[in-house]
Image 1 (cartoon, rainbow, N blue to C red):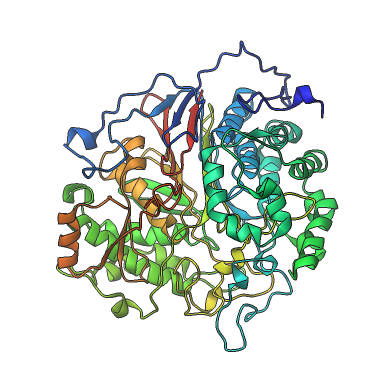
Image 2 (image 1 turned 135 degrees about the horizontal axis):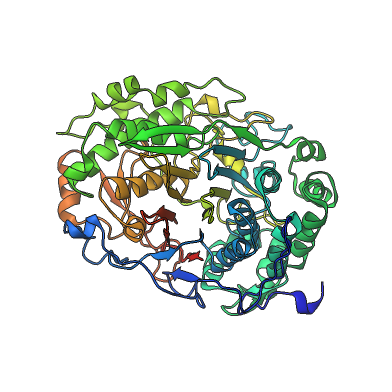
Length: 624
């Protein structure tokens, strides 16, 4: 590649894109309205801002307010646009997506390009070496659910992470053995092959430009600093991501030539290189060096699966989300159906009464999620039960408004909790009304900390999402059952929940999703509740403090500073154990007592879009 074709690391510049039906040139005179939201620190320095809609909402008009001292305002104005919107956790990636739309690409083109860009600039979560799920809604209302979740290698065994005493070791979290067979590349390719409008080469090219060098952000410095101990355990990982044995400095140019070469082969050869060619050989060589078990046969046999979406009604809105092996759609349906028995709007946002019935619903649905859900290709699932009114009636009937039900009375288990994951979510809509929601992950920060030598990307550690020892908590504190035990070729259960919501007329209304491990499901649902029940706009729905309960451990978790003392006391009087998230050290970017990284787009009555990217991790929403 010529130097002149590479990205300007201080201000993104993208090459000309070739549309399949017409040639388009991107230049300074292109008529674009770019409006950005960079709401946390300087992770979004350089974002353009523009006209935005008023912050008025039914929530504000009704006197709604966040707790005193909460760092995110309810009065900020959303990003607005008429032609399309991209919301992601990184400004560079969002700009890639919006430029793809400007070049004549559709929402799928933009989503694929955004995902590949995140693999470069957001290496702790964006990935080539992981997997995820994608929801697509076409302008005609047809909805598709794509599963590109990782799979257990064929050599995987049920007890592979247990020591001689039967205890779970850290080999499911750290190192080569923790990696499942990656699905991201297959998923992005299949989405583009089926629905893309631009040439594949043009969709991949921006990520190559970024891999040749981009400006290091606060976000990257913070995550590398937090993960450096694990990264140092693998010398090749450290050589790339801790150059000179140190975390890169903010504003430095960070180049990834090995990753650029992988992306160039992906551009020119498609996924065959990743699953059967030179990159596949590099992955297998890395496995052999470190005692991993992914083989060329595993890579060659990997396939993306198109599944039937989960769809359920919530107060006249239709919610579309992922089916198993994502637990998101069915668990959200169970919770929403139970909660329809109460008028959350009348009860008040985050009142003790509202939090109580939410926590009780979360508790019951998670108990069933952990017991019954797994890879549908391996076990028969009671999906109909999760969606049925009879199920919701029976579960709601066990909820007392006077006292909390101890989780031991719902289903006994073991206490543990850790909610952080390194997953990321992005959302896209285009001028035709096509919409895409994608959640992708390598599980922990920088996955298992292993970079494929010669390829430059981290491998996942999603094997930990199996029940390594049924009844024992994984790193997210989830106590799961026998159905999610490890099996060769099996997909591990996930909480990832990319979600698309339609209004009562069947029109596109919301595109939403978040990372956050076990908290993903409750965070996505609260974004919907905040809009539908409490009249919030996109900013308020994203900024609002979040609560969580996952059955085990038996506690109501809330963000640091997100719950007033009187509310917490009222919940404790009902019998709840309330725990505030540890704020962590003052300079910790991700351990500051927050949860999730919501990306939310909403359709407005006049046909325009509003969007907001979560300030908890410093993302960017851009429109045109």
